[in-house]
Length: 324
Image (cartoon, helix red, strand yellow):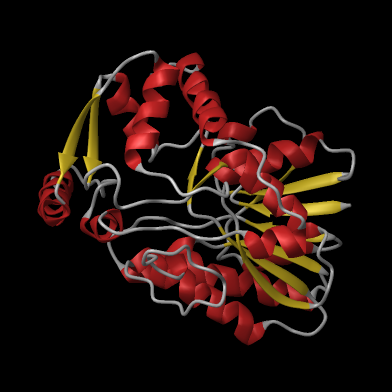
């Protein structure tokens, strides 16, 4: 099989590309590279120079491939227009060309953010889409575009993971970095809000499970580690792996937006759009849980990594690479 990967230099995409390159099932792995190969440097893949705005490059990239893994996306930007360009318009470009070239299978990575926060019970795929952030709105629009332009000859699987963590991740990483310094800021009381999580290895497993689904049409699934977590649980697990107790600093949700506003304003003086921004603050104060029952039943998805195993692998990678 031949595969084309977008986002192969990023966090999730690089882990997927690693697996595909090492797999005997794929005779050729093509990765779209804008400039720096980053995590793919020195590995055996076919480099496609360009980006998702270059239609000629995309046409060449998908010629003769059996499956496209569309992992590329933007998670933070100052405006909705920036996110829509990266997440909606780019996806439409790729999908139209892929269908014209007759690519039979496409797997697209979306997000729980496209649906919005949960209320007491984990969200399932039949829940209405009510995103609250610009990022979530762009992912919702991306999914709607896919449904609008999908033809009857292609099998498209959309996956919606919740918070993804693991080696190479640089946003949730800030939590582990603070815990390593024995300080642990937590929004809420440690028990609420709750969240679903998934280790990057299980995201890759879910993506590979999706390839097996060959029925024509558009199919959508949540994938998670099958558990609902509290921040006290995450803090405790992190402390155990680090061998360091951390002091929890519980922050009332009503203060988070003001803190994010201050951080964002300060960062703007340096031309930076920070991880903690006003858009992110909207998400942090709410509960984000989902059910992966449908993926288990229809794709055969079964998460391999518990929270303890995932955090252990993640922290040990950070330590080996001097991030901690």
